[in-house]
Image (spheres, rainbow, N blue to C red):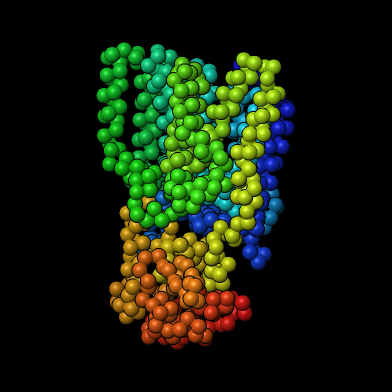
Length: 619
């Protein structure tokens, strides 16, 4: 078996070359991040990240965790923790200080691409400790580099927090393996704890990556293979301190919150549970009394968080109805049954079809190697694959495990029969070409819509109208939730609902938005006098075989949409303006009978201004 040695220059060169391939694959998404000479965030959530990041770039002291402009009129605490956006804002400020660009967006859109090199490096850190030979390491790196799922994480303008989540998942495995290979090392214990402690600053749910290490230490403990008490104590204290360091600046924590969906005292409590667990496993003996004491303490530790566990379970399984409407919340199998199995093969490669066998392999190898430090890899892979098949958005938890377990098996074969090494590597490379043919042929090079939104080109002129109107007279816009982040990015107006779907308030605001849309202008002014603008925009426009158009909306058809699309001819050059409303701007689609695509009204305006034809698409 290969053992890690001093870092060779050939490995560094290999990392640079594989990283170059990975970043080149990411750059294929560049057209999605530009429109008419401006950089555009890619992905709905990226627009909100960008707004908070750019606000912080302009004034670091203005960084906010409560946004009064979303979920109006109440506003709400942000469920995204502070760490990711705050870090990217300061990276951007640093790059601007170095003179790389005066435009923060010109820097920000490239950060996910450059971060791909970090994640390739973390993968190499894992493969060296498994260990894999350089040849198999290159194959693992190239597979990661050309995976469309990773392209979506690291594409130009994809500054959602998911690529940073992948970084912490890989770093946790790499640091954990390093510690278990040398359990007496307090430095390695501290490094593993720092990674796990800081992770929830990127995404609240990342406390879950503590579980594989805890499970591994528990299995080793049952075999009387405990980590040294001093090393375990170092891990426990460092985990508490690093978690405390990210919790103290968090506004939900300062407000005394204890909840799963914001960075709060809940996360420090989870860290304390992990710290106590590791301390017990490093000091107790796995006798009958020791196991009983450990079980009783573990049950007691779970009592304060029992009410939060169903919330986490609902989010992971996508149980609430609004979550079922989000494509990325679908399990891959359901998406494959709905769109055809080629659909998921294009995203995951054909390795996705081997997941049941891969999970059985991980369970078998974990049992066989239960006394080895490599047990952590098998446990992490098994848990990661379970999350990967639960939701499409969680592919980064188990993406590395689609291939690495099989490469380990092949490496072990080559260690036993070195005369077959070159032949095995060649056949493996050929097999990977076949397994990755669907994404290489289709998904990786497929053109992506601007902002990864089929309707963004048509929406952009209306966003310019909104920005101008809100600059002159800001207020609350009643608009569909899918455009909420766009409105926040381009204007200073507030929105009733957006694509945040986690807390009860989020779901309540979706219901409120849909209800307000059904009201007449008179009813709206009476029931929600704080609404200043109304934006009517179909979610989809379909042309039927008979030439008629059908319009779909999120929830019930808005009252104003009925006036516009049903009671009056959509071919009319100007839609009637109901009493109590002022027509601020309208975008029409000349290719579809010149129908209005997006219409912005101002509620109860006194002097309706003329609508500029510059807002019309195609004019």
